[in-house]
Image (cartoon, rainbow, N blue to C red; front, side):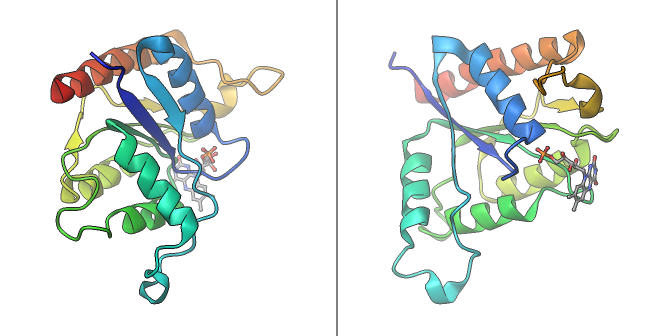
Length: 186
Ligand code: FNR
């Protein structure tokens, strides 16, 4: 079978984002079992129907990457017990090209998140599941890794070192999502 493509969408534009670091750990865990890349979308505009047509170039590039992906993996921070506005803006753009039959419909998805707080992003993830389910994504709900207390997980160089239980869960999520996506592609 051809290698599956997983596109990671990090809901933070911050250079030192914990969620970006988590996505990079997942990339390592995936290794050569799948193509795993991070979507760069920091230059897409705020959604506004007045600028929707013609599609802005930065948005067109996002559409191309999403269209080429066999599965999406969201890494979401938690802002006020919700997922961040940049992620909602991105999903609003992606939801648009085909109305009800949007680009995400039927696409496998999973979620993880990390926060310096105690919730581990569980509340934000639940809100995100509501949105991507509305968009008819094929959501793998278990396991969904939530990592709290991020500040305590950085080494002296700022590298994220997951505690063993989180790492084990993440490995299960990686294995689970690869087979979830492969089954749907078969
Ligand atoms: C936060 N943060 C936060 N953390 C949390 O656990 N629960 C929350 O509800 C919130 N709310 C919140 C609101 C706003 C506006 C900001 C800017 C931050 C803290 C947040 O988890 C922290 O900034 C993370 O570092 C964001 O993720 P990245 O950018 O490191 O991936």
